[in-house]
Length: 282
Image (cartoon, rainbow, N blue to C red; front, side, top):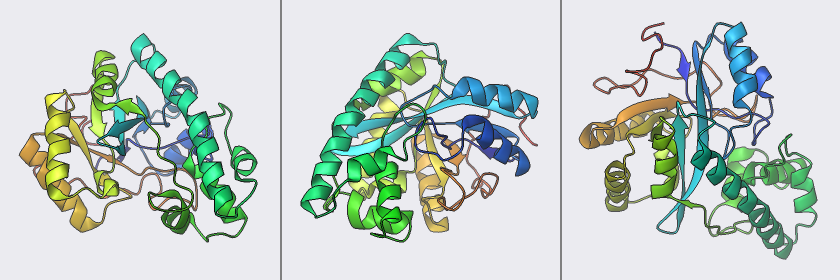
């Protein structure tokens, strides 16, 4: 059985392990093919690639990009991207700049709810690149006792309609797919169950994604129940998408799946890596 993980995060974005430490954990857990997909940043790819080479792990250059679509935030993975492709590099830099203002808006929303010091508290958890996201606020809120774990803190504070939510305009779906495919990579909709889209809107997203050149769907995810895995496998077959799998690992004790813990892909789905120069059955 192929032990592959195409979605995880390091300290370059909101993970708790450095890129090299992440690769070491993947090695210890038997992962043979690994993609690092930090949020809106590719600065960790070189370190991770070097560490993976030493461990004889096939490494895939990746990124998870924030997208605004019909007033919603969705995430698109870029797999097998060229980290030197300038439209991708410049686009990600612009997104990261926008994260600073969003963080201020989240902090202001939390202050209105009576929670002070959240911006400084969140930045205390930020990694080496200074990229700040909701996960850093979540860690602050957990540390201060406002919630017990990641799932509950997001549900209580950081999603739409809750005290710490702040709307933000990210990149457009069309330009993000252009960055990814222009770099030679493959665009993948990450964890589609998390967006809570109705059936018709979900089909609209998949239709538009396909028309713009997106070609794959993350079917196996820590965000998906076994029933949802089957639902999204059927969507993949219907829309002729390749399928991907990823733990969305951020750190020990924070993630629902650890590295190397993913179930098998559903029968009848074509894996996103089927035409890559990687082992097909490890």
